[in-house]
Amino acid sequence: MPRLVSWLFVPGAAQRFMEKLRVAKPDVAVLDLEDGLTQAERPEARKRVALALSRSTSVTTPVAVRTNAVGTSDFTADLDALGPALFALVLPKVASGAEVEEVGEALSRLGLGHALVVPLIESAAGLRNAFEILTAHPSVGGVAVGGEDLAADLGLPFEVPGEPSDSARRAVMDAANARVILAAAGAGVSLRIDTPTIQLGDSELVRAASARARAGGFTAKFAVHPGQIEPLHSGFRPNELEVERAEAIIAAGAAGGANRVNGMMVDEAVMRQARRVLSDAER
Image (cartoon, rainbow, N blue to C red; front, side, top):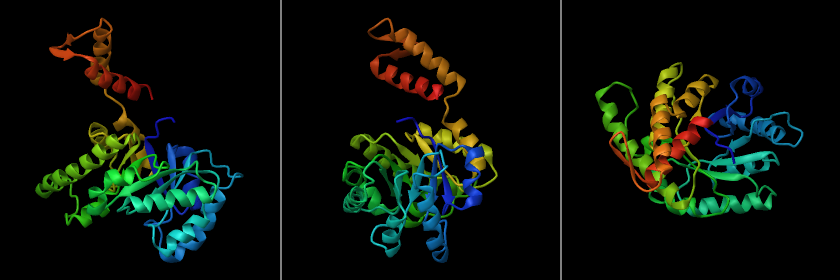
């Protein structure tokens, strides 16, 4: 599977947003049936999602759907809107492995066993059970963090970049993110999607947040506006210094055994990291 870095939310497959996919070119379009819609908008949105997921669809971008949470009446209705072109189901507010197992079995019954399930970790319960969630069913193909819901569940204040309170909030969120990344690594889940940057109109903030997410073990990030796609991709690409250092490490490692590059010992573990940098740079 190719690396899928940018996951753009599209509220309910609304036509005005779907048309922008050809220009924005996200790696994945996430048709949103949850937070991006009011209750009254959802029935019509499901019709549009069903059309987008039919085999006759003209959408060439891989299509995911964020449904409502398992156990809600909305989730049952959301399942009826899914179709054969579904690439992934982004499942919100997951707190237990049983929820993931239920979804995986439901997709199989619908003939959609090819679709990935991407649990969204958005609560303290989800954090506690992260490894269980990611190993609950073979359909799990990724994991994502819903930062704002998680922050609310943890009792944190709003993110206000530059304010003194932000460093304390970030420390808690970093610890939460690390727990998800460790669970994903232990479960063999390589697709790890960071929460979206909700501040709009600040490309540099998106780029910096994406670079920080990559450094923290994430391989992808949600976007909430087409204008975030380019800086998001930029942030996930290694910079020139990283690439030069990785190339030097690979060259030194080719000689075999342990070597030294710029005062750093180079062995197979370091070479694995260098290979990942060059792989990211080639994308």
